[in-house]
Image (tube, rainbow, N blue to C red; front, top):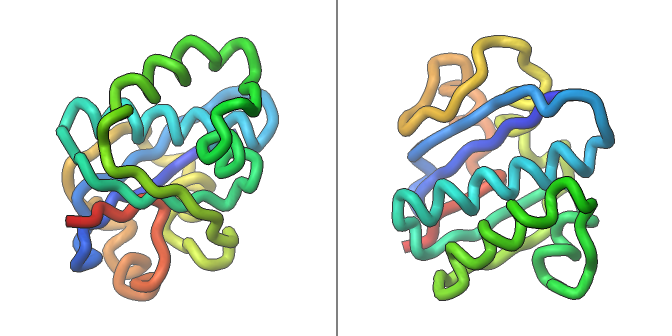
Amino acid sequence: MHAGGVVRNAFNSVVACFQFSAGAGFAFEAELFSFIIILERAAAHQWYNLWIESDSTYVVNVFNNREVPVPWRFRSRWQAALKGVEHYNLRCSHNYREGNHVADYLASSHSQEGFWLHSIPEIAQLVSDDVHSSFVRMVR
């Protein structure tokens, strides 16, 4: 199972992107782990205003309703990630997988894993084709 995402600014320019193997498990776990990674990076890079889109209604519900439990193996990292951005302006909404070709490509790609603070060549065309949706959009 793989996960991936892209961070764009308000002008739809790529700020960062990532992809990684999430090992064996359920798809919602990869989506939750992606969410954790982006929250951690938001805190590290001081991205104070984020609009996070996910194709997982479970993860959107977990974020928007903090009473919904997460699997125990993610719980401490999830809580720490939320604490790191507790004073940030965050918004989370659902976006169908078909509406986010960039994240879909990154999640299904088996190329090098990583987190890049720039666009990678493989997604340049997808970004321009996929202007109206994103996994994470920075709002300034």
